[in-house]
View 1 (cartoon, rainbow, N blue to C red):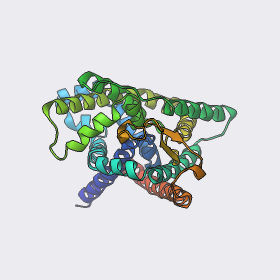
View 2 (cartoon, rainbow, N blue to C red; view 1 turned 30 degrees about the vertical axis):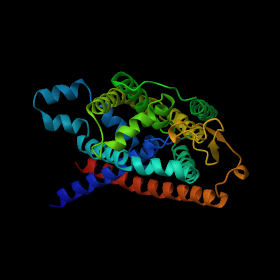
View 3 (cartoon, one colour; view 1 turned 120 degrees about the vertical axis):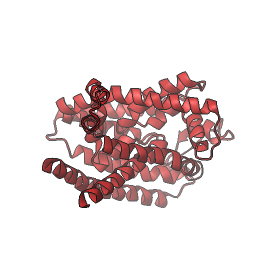
View 4 (cartoon, rainbow, N blue to C red; view 1 turned 180 degrees about the vertical axis):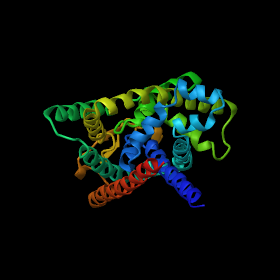
Length: 323
């Protein structure tokens, strides 16, 4: 009985981890990969996805389901995946509302979380070198340049949904580069989120379902391909990879700078069509004290999440060792 209880509590924890990742992925400029790093399950996630290979398929076709599912850490992936889906579908409307009406305060909270995350990941570097500093700068410049890209106008159809998903899911699993923002640049963010918002209410037609299905397939293809590269990098060049990830996170702050407003040319357009210009704090109508307070809150929340994630990771490692 205790083992089952422990298993169900582990499932609930993984669902909550996924919920946090899904909520983060909705916001352009914030990455679910960053949340995975904070909560201590990033490398486990990358390894589990990368293990979905020919060997796994062979095990399943031969009827060795237990061995196959164990190979890919299926219970972990199912719990996490269901949480991500819940976060994306269930919180899409709330996040959209907050971005429209309280953008500065939403962004300030996440700036604090990203700053704290960058610090926590930087602590994982075994030994600081000049090369690590250079890699951090390179990662920051890459993320900054991506964040400055102008959104495209792309038609929404099954093919563009599939290709956009392949690219965006690679960004989602990378801390610092937001899959949501990549979708925004590709012109797919708002059409896809509109479909997701209508899904729980049943407000979606057959075409929309086909587009969402091809989008999910694109996510799977991108994940299975990119996770193998990430697993190799983390195994062979761990500290160098972590240094680049720190840079990517720091560079992504440009996109979620709290003080910004719609450009004069797009201010009257619907929110999804607006473009934004960066402001100095004194030029914005947002409360500087509230922005600062939420930034500090983001730092504290992240440190608490990392502390919980460390304990959970230690518990998982102990269970694995016992077995």
